[in-house]
Image 1 (spheres, rainbow, N blue to C red):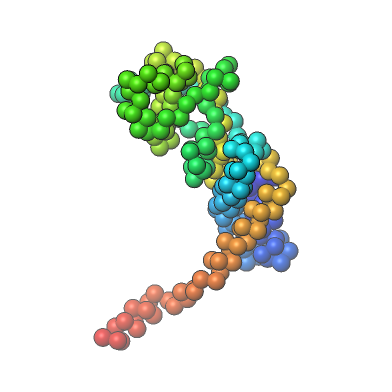
Image 2 (image 1 turned 90 degrees about the vertical axis):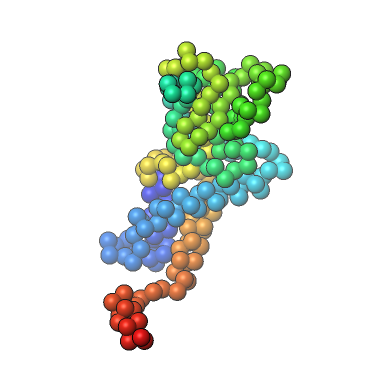
Length: 212
């Protein structure tokens, strides 16, 4: 399954099973709604299971390998986020795991943007020898020494699907696929129910002038 295939299924339902090129709703029209629906469904699924487990279903996690880079101005080592991730999950769990490629079990600690200042000088700031990182826009800065530049990092993200190409294979369970499709249809119907402005702009200007 891919984003395109999900959007295609939604388009077929909306168009009454018509796959023709001149159908009222095209697949491209629904790709954004598919990404939005995926984020909504994944968050709802996580929150629903929060009492049972704080883990994310492995089928929703995508793994990337990136190299550490050096920010000469700040004298810090960072890595560039390889994809957007689901940032609306509690405790930034959308960034599920970060570690050196060869030491996956020694995961790093996300201390947040204010973490360095809050932990500075405290005895537990070493985090048991674990590296620390915090996210700024599309970069994640680390507490690692400059000599770590070039090392490979393994990153596991609950990816926000707007950052994935539409033909990327998605290992999504069938029940979640169905929930996503229903959510897309709900988004589409909500848009259709909104009042449509069909008056020509030139006519509006003419009416305004006449009113004066």
